[in-house]
Length: 256
Image (cartoon, rainbow, N blue to C red; front, side, top):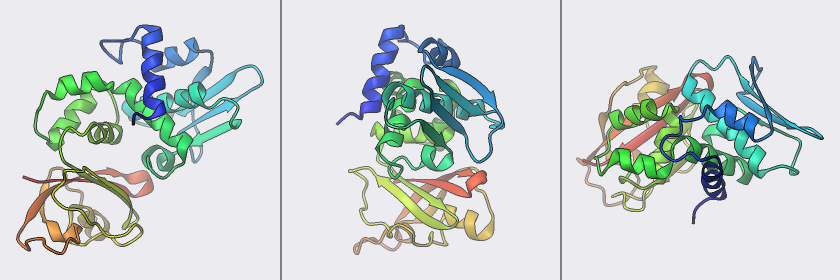
C-alpha cells in the first residue's frame, strides 16, 4: 500500500507542474507558495520546526546544518506536516531521531518522511536513473548528488522501492534500534532491537574501534543474522553511513 505522504506529494507536484526534476523549483519557494513562511535560523536541539498559527504556519530549518541535501529534506519534511497535519497539533519539532527513525516515530512523522522522500526523490525519476543497475555504495552517493538529497534519505528511498534485495540496520550508541529487510533477502532473522551491535561488522568497527569505513567490506552473514542454517563461511557486503551528531549508523547489507 502506498503511504499517504507519497500520495500527497505526488498530488502537490502535479498541482504545481513539477514533472522532470525535483530541483525545478527551490523547496523554500514551494513552501511560501503554499502559504507558509520559511526561514533558516540557528536552532537548539532541533533540525526543523513548524508552528501552526491562527492565520499562517511558520517553518524554520536549522541554519547550522552544513549539508544542503539535509536542509532540503528537513524543509520538505516540515512542508509535509503543513500539507497533511493541520489541526492535529500546533507544533511539530524534528531532529535526527524523527527524521531517521522512519518506522518508529509515529504515523505523522512517517507520513512526513514519505512526503519529503517523494518530493525530493520522485519514484519514476529514481527508477529511470537506476535503470536495473546493480546495487553499490557508489550508486547511493551518485543518486544523492544527482537529486541534491541526503545520503540517508536517498538510501531509504532506494530500499523502499525494492530495486535490489537489501537489509538496512539503524544503530545508535552501539545498540540496534531498528531494521528493515527486503522480502527476497537470503536471510531472515536479526538480533532483537536494543541488543549490542555485533563486534565483527562494519558498524562494530565504528562503535568499538572508532573506525569509519568509507567503502564496503565483506562480513560473515552469521555475525548479523541468526538463521540456524547459515553456512559459517557465507559472507555479505556491508557499507555504513554515519550521523556523528547522534552517534548513529546506517548499515546496508547485500549479497554478492
